[in-house]
Amino acid sequence: MSGREEVDQASLGWLSGVSLMSGGSLVLFGFVSLLLSLFGGGLAGVLVGAALLVHGIVELQARSAVLQRSDMRGGRRLCINQLVLAVSISAYAGSQVFNLNDEAIGQAVAKALESPLVKSFLDIVPVEALDQVVDQMPGMVRGLYVAVVVVAWLGCGLTALYYRSKVRVIVV
Image (cartoon, rainbow, N blue to C red; front, side, top):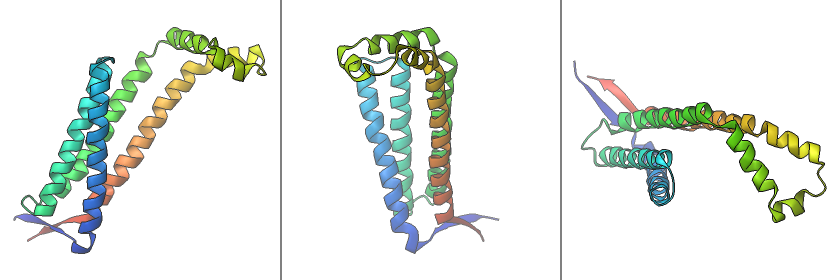
């Protein structure tokens, strides 16, 4: 038994556009992130930039394979790439949640609150309220990373489902 995949001709244009936008934006953000991290960021930034760049390249190569019909597994590769991208984002965000330094976050927020510009905006806020914000900031940052994971799985998961719905496996 052999299988082949067939691309719905009416949907090929949409598939092409979505995968071009997805792959192109991943390459762009990955490249920019990688450059910025190489010249002033840490290892995490370099890894994130490289991962985005690789996922973007894989997306564009799979798109090209579908459009040229030279590799009809391209649709499956598009789907899998999105799921692996969600895993990559989740791994990064999860590592950040567990490696956050609560004291360093509090100090950074306190320092930002001492800025003359920030002080001028916050003159009307009671000091106790600002202290509460500083105390709650580590939890808020962790919550932001959890939200990133949820959004990544929603976005990548729905995109993977879209790709999968456009390329069907037909057993001959």
